[in-house]
Amino acid sequence: MSEQGFTRGRLLGAALGAGGAAAFLSACGGDDSPVDFDPDAKLGPAIFPPDEDLVEAFGPGDIGIANYALTLEYFEADMYAQLASSGILRGSEQSLIEDFATNEQDHVEVLIGAIKGAGGTPAERITGKFKFKDRDQALDLVLEVEELGAGAYLGQAPRIRSKEVLKLALSIHTVEGAHAASIATLLGRSIVPDGSISAPESAKTVLDSVTPLIES
Amino acid sequence: MSDKRREETSPVGIEVTGVTRTAFLVRGALGAGAIAGAGGALGFASQAFGQETTTTTGEESEELRQTGGPGAVGDLEILAFALGLERLEAEYYVRALEQVDLSDEVKDLAEDIADNEQQHIEKLLTVIDVLGGEPPAAPTFKFDFSSEAAFLDTAVALEETGVGAYNGAAPAIQEAFLLEAAGGIVQVEARHAAAVNLARGTSPTGPFSELLDAATVEKKIAPFIVG
Image 1 (spheres, chains in turn red, brown):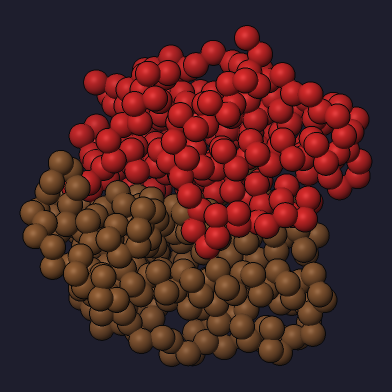
Image 2: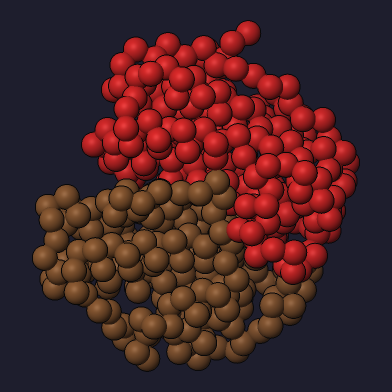
């Protein structure tokens, strides 16, 4: 049911209107990638069962997963925007945060386009209540959120049914990992806190951690 | 190893509440998270790394995927390709650490990354073994090391190629556990790419990671492969 409409044409056609869509299309190799959407397509003989906490909060299927992702992207985009305007950071660190703010806003726009293109309703924008005090505390918080975000995408990837949605999720997932590693580098922390293979996070863990920081 | 063999002979049916035999074996071999990898389309491993396998066109592999055919066949070839990429990366860092005069900071980073890549190799070999596959022989690589700057340039290129290769192949993975594991690896590759970019003084990431097709990956790594 909720899978209907995630055709490549509608997904990417809708996304074309969004600011970051050109970059995503380019990342996917442009328009000549094969049209491989099938509403009944599954990843294989074993797809993970839905994450019930996600379904409860955002609804079933790929649209529910996309709205979960969108909500996390709203949160991250707002986090970076608030930090960028806080005046706490200087120089190359400030530039990096501004770049990451733009990345997250690009993710927001492409996800909204994808959800609308599939006939879904994008989740409402949320804002965060971040109390940035100083450089270390601010980057600590950003790192925690980015680690959750990267784990959140990894946690849902094997639950996505549409290959087009999976491609979008994969393309964003590794950017979240790059963000986390970059912030870790600034703080002198390990860039691979889980070791050589990153771990997925459940929606419950992610939402429990993020919800106290959402402006209600 | 004995534990893994025991798992392999467990009386698992074709499917038990959605868990395939492949999933069971992989999970048994690697613990909760599982493992694995990705790479190009079917046939790519044999071209890029001299593996003796039957090549399959992208269309055929797509058909296989859609019909829910024997996932381990396609997945094994993706695993073999991922192994080749990881061997390329691991050897690059190992040789650089021997041959290039690196600053302390870059040396530490290269050592950590080399360690991660070696662990990826070991996990991939384990999964290939458990799934009944035969890992391809390791190819011979060639690298030019002239300076730390040149080292970082190639490290960025290799890591970004690795990210694109895993991401490009991941949608073709049949088995969800392998997809999760490939995701866990590709996220680490993306972390490496970000860190080497920062060490080089370049932007750690754009807004979207590339999904590279097999031919593109092959072209990118060809200069490093002797045979």
